[in-house]
Length: 177
Image 1: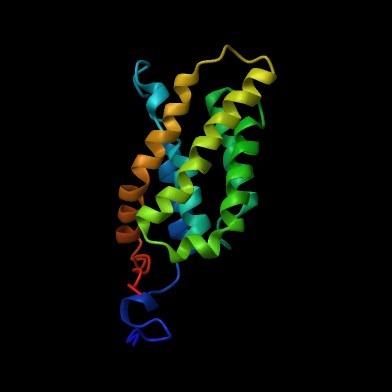
Image 2: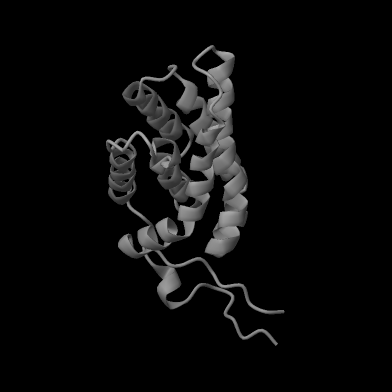
């Protein structure tokens, strides 16, 4: 017999995230993305802005939706000096997919979320690379896909850290059946 209560209890009833917490964390992630990384490892640096955006798409979809994804993508395009709209399209595509499966993702624990988000994080890098090549921007450097793999590996510590900082309840544990 399952002794788990039907309604959330205790720490699971934490206050929902505020707009201020969401926007500050997105600004910090954007600043982290823009740090002057060494040229030798720049292709390994994940897109922290997208990772924070996807985190809030799962935890607070009303506060960080497609409009926020488009705005952050355009801002990323401007600051990185890439084809205008390239990251905006990639951010919107990733956000759209996460918002489609948001209810499922919020029920998973962090390792299962990582498995679900890995193709999205890798797909964003592949989309930016492919569209950049189609538009005649540079040559194919497939090393850039490694940033998607690094992002997937960094998802569990990032989710844990943001959960602790913003006092969000951890994702529900899967009960044995």
